[in-house]
Length: 378
Image 1 (cartoon, rainbow, N blue to C red):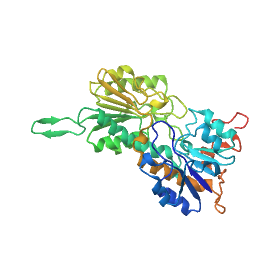
Image 2 (image 1 turned 135 degrees about the vertical axis):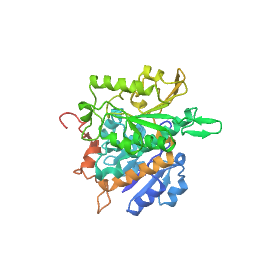
Image 3 (image 1 turned 90 degrees about the horizontal axis):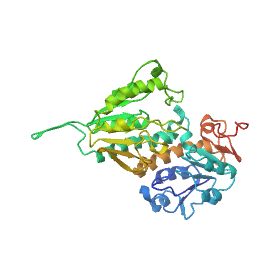
Image 4 (image 1 turned 180 degrees about the horizontal axis):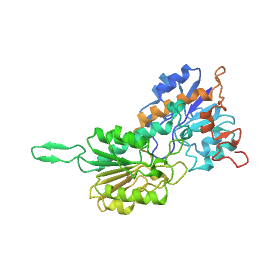
């Protein structure tokens, strides 16, 4: 199989879908890899390293002759026009936010894999790109918060006096939230966290954080079978809001990470709650690309309200391009056997496999994923 690795064209995107390490392994499996010139430069993987690993490097990445094209982000219309019919394409396609692109891929008879749709099951953990990237986003969120916060994180006892530890509140205890808790604790902060999913209480405690939530009967049923948070009732939201409002006013840093696939991000920090924080406090909103968990946040823009600094990041993993690329490339490498015929090495998705069923959006010119296929096809 011929695999093309394309250079990212999205604004601010510094990641790449392959690394010299994964290229070497892919070539060892009997495939050929062509990397577009300069694709790895911003992630500190120059062309020479890809060549040394066994890849070809060309101006167009070999897109026209590829059986499988891989990227980090969605393809451009020009790129879709160059991919041959019957080929595969894999990336973080963000299909809920751009249905036109997946429709164009289907129309071009390209079998498109959305890496964010990889099912969250044990067998697919090594392919889970959402988790690998969210892990780094949670870490980087704390580092960014520390940079914006005008005080120290750990408690310091000096001859001149004592510096109090920063109080950090994590809202949303998914992969990013858990890593944020761990990172803030390592930096010496006093950490608390909240989530509507009951299972997260023990996870927060295991990392040394304090769990903050109204633990009623609705709370005990607030998780889907896929591990995502369910939308909560207005009554529960009011009770939780009262508890959180009191808590936020005492915090130095708030990091919000709550997202529900296919929906606008829930509001976790209201304007009034943000203004209740003392001057110099920081809010980091990781959900700003889907509307934000705080209505005051703006995409990739620092906003100051009453001395409180509010920053919404749309792509924190791109601020750690080398590590983010390495993890994402390994996600793709782990998925490759399910896209390949074992004997011929040709592009041949395992259509009956539950991972492929969950992540494949199009097949043979039609959208097949139940979230996007026409009602008759679904």
